[in-house]
Image (cartoon, rainbow, N blue to C red; front, side, top):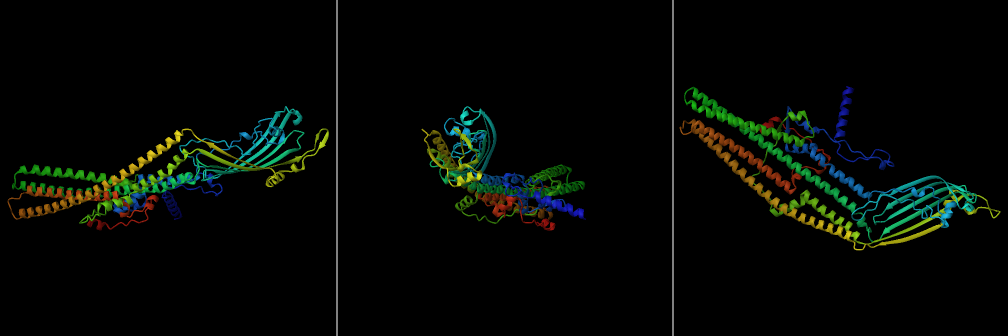
Length: 632
């Protein structure tokens, strides 16, 4: 008992796991490290929904229109592929919120064996202008990184970045300034910590905070403070004033991505609408094929009875034997038509099964489809005026909505090619404070002992005290102006973007004109199909009346009606019945096509976009009584 219960629980858990909709799931780790762990997505769904197996009874799949649509929403592979479109756009929106092209990294090469400016022998030499050195006078740290080229303005990085470069070095160099160094070889050790926090701004600029520390020691006997500790804090503000300036310019990718998220759902709604229309057409085609099969079956039964009656009459010598071959040919023809109708039904069942299932299922393959709903046709088509129908199509069609969203994104993206027409004018302001302290040493200067400056004696605490007291504060600012002569690249980019936008506008107008023509054509098709059905229905009724009258005349002993006449009447009636069935299916297809053209397929069939995105329909299927199906 326990084992069976465990197996049931495991099966239920697996089913629930596989029925999860596709999505990007953040890693289940503490929030502090979650951004650095790869997210995951559920495995693809490779099984059919439980609804499908629940609709199979005694080897038959009982389908209503609503259940066929629900199964397609849950199991259709093409729709399952389409579900990843909106998810991808959701991820694209998150990427757009981060901003920027590919990020570069800080370069540590400038800090190898580089004492701070004015610290130690080499730092003093560099400060005196005796060597170019490799030290950093501004304390910006390394700013090397990859260069990314892009048409239009590159959006700043909106995600803040925290970077750290830690360098340990031990350097021995020959020293030519022996009077200053006190040794032919200078040995320097340095521990450098450079931490930078950078934040991009939607104005196009950026703000950076740099915290820098260095512990430096050397073997120079004339160094008063050795080893020494330096601290430095920088605030750097950069802001373009012409090219790359503006909130609306730099957040355009976010706004475009937000529109694309909505547009992707409209695209999916269009795909769902097309699938629903396809399933409806498959359902009605199978219904018509089934009705034709029944008519062909009745025709064969009538031909078989005629053949048996003819053989009986010949055996009693009531009619000549020459009448038997035509009767045999009639049976053979009707049997061949029945076989073709049976093959057509099987083919239509395969197509409908493919539309409503995920994978191969032996039970589904072996099951015959029993359609519960029948095609209904109203007495009259109360269609609104054409102008009103066109207005409905413009308001409800997914492709119209997507076209509007495309125009909106084009307008937004045009700013990316308009702004580069301007010259480049950038400004930067930087403020930084420094502090230096270390172990004090008394050195011999001119034969006399010289004590260290007490102001610089101490550790990092003393250096940070100098820093926060602004004892060594610095301020710099600059502007940069670049004016391209001719500016042909930006002019060409802008011109191409404008031409493409105008082309898109013309395309949108052409699509509107096409919609008007399509709606008019679909309305005409519905009315024509209704007229054809009325004609086929009346023809079938007249043929039934004719057959009834000829049968009564034949049974009353009339000599003008023969078995051949009755068989011709029967064939004509079967053909009339098939014509009525085909006309009924043609009307259903025409009405489905009109609803699809108007964008009303989903609402008229109570299909929810959210259920389509999830791949699960909440409504439960109700299998009707088999006897009720038979009476239909």
